[in-house]
Length: 305
Image (cartoon, rainbow, N blue to C red):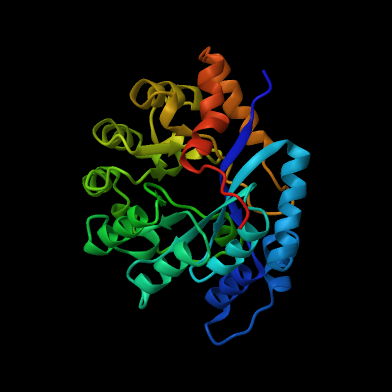
């Protein structure tokens, strides 16, 4: 069966993102070129946002991927993704990393939704060190409800490949990414879709419990899901089995966690997930929802303005 593929998890690693990583590694007052950071990471130097968007379009066409979420992967880089989305609103959905505790956060959030047309705010509580039941998180959900947007929340184990390759110190507080705490907030906003990536990244039991009590929670299937090493006896096939038992096929959203060029779009991730679902004997209609339909339902195509 030829599936329509939509990828709910791709990182738009712009020049601005690379420069931010350079400041973190070499000091906030140091100007570090994107070229130097790309060399250290071992990837292509990112183009300007409009050209990078075209590279992604070419890659999605080559891989027969219909649409993709592009994540602004450092705070303050919303405009890069906004530019890509404005050029290709039928192919891209704009996500953005957001720190709700930063100065001016509410104004930035409003601008990202209203002016830049971004449709999903991404929270990383372990990285930015706040609790998921903090009032600032409620404010984020309220803004998402107002703008008919979604909220992405990274729970569990957090490892960012670019940071690993740059040997940046890991200061993440993993205690703060608790899906059960998230559910208490999400239940207050029944119109806001919530996306937890990587099946909860090690908090499988907790994310299944949270999803069972909160029907707006969706799980994205992205990355290699190497966190299964923390769950005795877990395999990707078993993870899919448990997730389908609790959430069904309507609340699982395919993703790859693609980022660098090369390799570009990570077909190997798609292959592993397709194999796992084939092993479970999943029906064609259910596979169509997971690999494409659920993304289209949550993020219907917006016409060009």
